[in-house]
Amino acid sequence: MVTKAKKRPAAEINRIAKLLDDAQRKAKPVPQLSSKKGGALSIEDAYRVQDAAIKLRLKRGDTRSGVKMGLTSRAKAAQMGVFDPVYGRLTTGMLVQDGDSISHAGYCHPRVEAEVAYLLKSPMSGRLSPAEAMTHVEAVAPAIEIIDSRYANFKFSLEDVVADNTSASGYVLGQWARPDTDMSNLGMVLEFNGRAVEIGSSAAILGHPGRSLAEAARFAAETGDELQPGYIVLAGAAAAAVALSPGISVKLTVEALGSVGFNVEA
Image (spheres, rainbow, N blue to C red):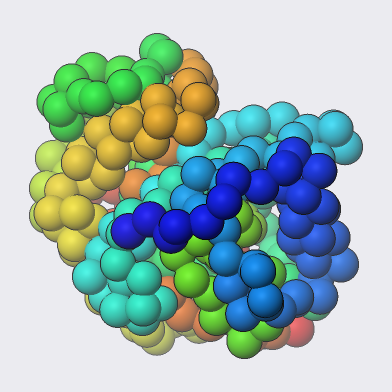
């Protein structure tokens, strides 16, 4: 899906990037871009905004740590009303250590997703098969992504969410496992305070999370990015995102991979 829109000048791209960056830093949502007169972006310009916003993070001393795939499951696509996979960038400042706590007040309207992560051992970019993409993988792990759209009411178009770095906000990684672990159909249970809130399978991630890994390589090439050794690739949600509230203990258990979790301060 591509929106027909004139390519925006660099100054306007930077202005939108700063608007979204400020919304993220201050935890104050802004109206969605596509709701404004003349606000609709092309997908190309949306990725330009994403890149410009990440550069603002890097100027503040953050460093790149990987990428994330979004809208890779039917449940998540239906929940958001957006049906094309998207690509976002991760930084070290987004990492939440397994077992640590976050402040709910530091986010606009945070939600969590059950995912799996890949750790790369070599550069990866271009059109690859899932098998070819897997030759670049050093290890796999259970992962939770914390998403937080910077738009009011968690409402956005495809172009909006791409510009907003696909709602990327945080990620939590479990213990790393062997790269040859069979990821085709792993049971996944997301719990809040010991109660299951989402149950899914890694098969929900584009049919196999390895396909999402290959998609990440393709998106990297198309956006002028390159996935580096040591980068994390979050494969995307295996089920719908669940809203967080203060006082919750979050735990994800992935069959054959183990558990990972964090807490939300009361």
